Picture 1: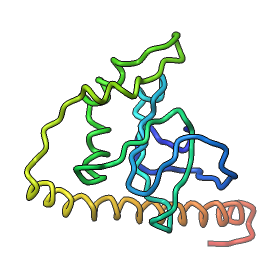
Picture 2: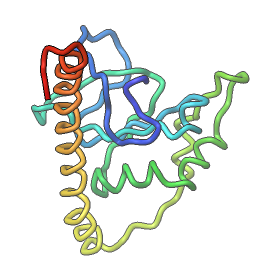
Picture 3: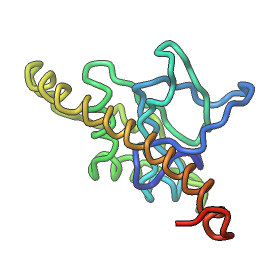
Picture 4: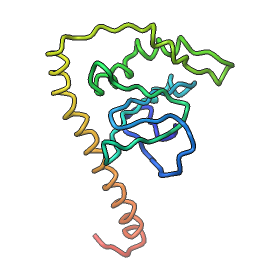
Amino acid sequence: MEAVSTNSMILTGIQTRPVGGGAKFKNGDTLLARITPSLENGKTAFVQFMDDADMVATGSTEFIVMRSMKVTPHWVYCLARSHNFRQHAINSMAGSDGRQRVKPDCFEQYQVLFAPPNILKYFNNVSAPVFKQIKYLNSQNQKLKEARDLLLPRLMNGKITV
């Protein structure tokens, strides 16, 4: 759950470990936090970090894996970020205070209108490059952070002069 951000679609701090259970997901899936306060804080991620399209990853059981069936993966992510959808999930929570969880069957009652196929196709044509660009820019940011973390201590202790 710590890899899911409250304000970004990018998963961070991904680790490789032996599979020990948990929710299974693949590229194109949306991860929606199912516990308090993570859902209220906006924890939602779009999975696009795996190099192989056939790879499957596992993670916390504290999120719901949303997969597109009739629409694009990008549309599903945008739905998961929408206020009404999140409020519907929050209203379905049950459990003791501080440990409430979304009931997965609450989504069976959530109705959405689908756009005609040509509009969905147009949406995908616009959104897919944006999601790809977000992934690329995030990888560039990671490289810049690594360079900064390598160079800044050397600059501060005088090993590198400017």
